[in-house]
Length: 70
Image 1 (cartoon, one colour):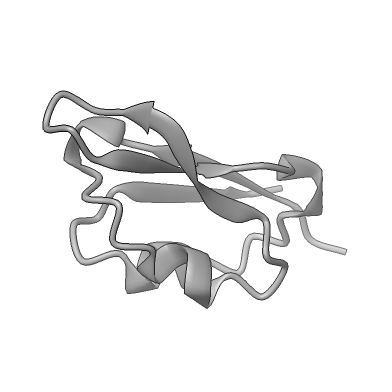
Image 2 (cartoon, helix red, strand yellow):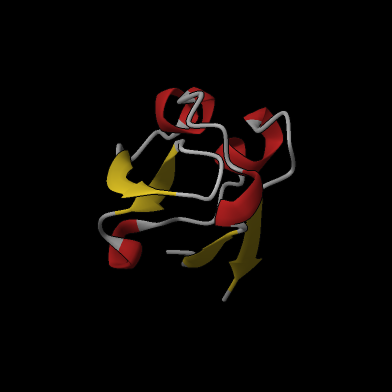
């Protein structure tokens, strides 16, 4: 099965949750951490379960997420 690795540019994340709703594996959430603008940033809670589908990156309106596939 394909594996993926997600990277988030937290400085630009608005905490809109679109990526969270788009993830078929339900491995994304809003962190308790905030960025300089005060938004809770998205994070991956289990990178091992990421399949590299890139649904999260496709849904992100600010291009915050980069997906790499193994």
